[in-house]
Image (cartoon, rainbow, N blue to C red):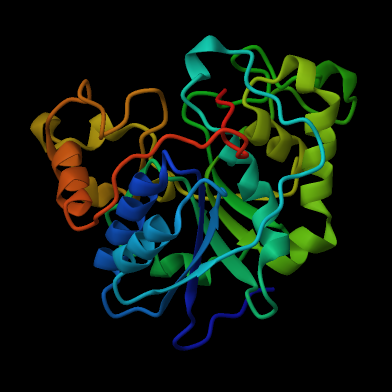
Amino acid sequence: MFTPTEEVILDCALAFDATYAPHAAVVMSTVAAQMPTEPLRFWLAADDDVTEPARASLTRAARHATVTFLTVDPPPIRLPGSREPHLSYLSAAMYLRLLIPHALPPGVDRLLYLDSDVLCTGSLAPLRDVDLGDKPVGAVRDAFTRRLIDNGGLPGIYGYRDLDAQAPYLNSGVLLIDVPRWRELEITAAALDYIARHAHEARFPDQDALNHAVYGRWTRLPKRWNHMMAWRLDPTVGGSITDASVIHFAGPVKPWHPTFPDGVFRQLYRRHSRRTDLVTARPRAGSLTASRR
C-alpha cells in the first residue's frame, strides 16, 4: 500500500520523438508552472532523433525540476501502425511508454506518465497520495472508447474468454504507475506479447495492449486527471479550466495546429511555447519513429 510522506518528489515521465519534442517541452513547462515550489523530476524517453540541442532545450523548459533522459531500447518486435487512417498522425514513440518502468533507477516507485498533447492546468500533487492498492496502474476511462467493445472492439476480444466486452477501457495518455507492482506483474512483457499477436489488426496499438495487460487490474481515476473534452471547459460556453488538472487534446487536431480554434487553450499553449526554444523537427530516417502510424 502506498504511504505518502512529507516532501515526496513527484516523478513524471514523457515519451516522444523529434516531432513531438517541442510539445513535450510545453507540457513540462505547464506542470512546473502549476507546481512552482514542489519537488519535481522529469524522466524523458526520447527517441534517438531528438538532438542534443533539443535535449538541452527540454531541460530548460522544466524550470526548477530536474530532468533525466532515460536509455530505452526499442522492443525486439515489429511495431505495427494503426489500421485506422485517421490515426496516421500518431508516432511509433507511443510504444516507449510501455518500456519506461523498466528503465527507471531504483527508488522511483511511483510515476506519472503524461502524453505530449496534454496541458497541465492544476497542481498534480494530489496524485502522490492516491492509493492504488495492489493495482499497477491508475488511469481515466477513455471518453470516446468507453468499453472494450467500442469502436470496433479490442482486437481479438472474442478470443479471450476471460474478457468482459462491457468492461471499461482506459486512456493511456495519463498513467499513474506503481513501478514495483508493474514490474512484478510483468506488464511490459504482457503488453508486447499482445502487440505481437495482433500486429495485423492493430487499432490503438499501445493503448489496446495496455488495456489487455492490466485488464481487471487498474484503478479508475476521476476525469480531472485526464480530461478529454476540452470544449466543455471553455469559459466562453460557461466552463472553467479549473475543473481539470490535466487537459488531453486527443484526436488529430492539436493546440499547435492552425485549424485549432482560438481561445483559452490555444493561448495557454502559445504562452508556454514562447517560453521554450524548441522548433518542430522531422524524424530522422531509421529512428524508432521514422515510420508514422
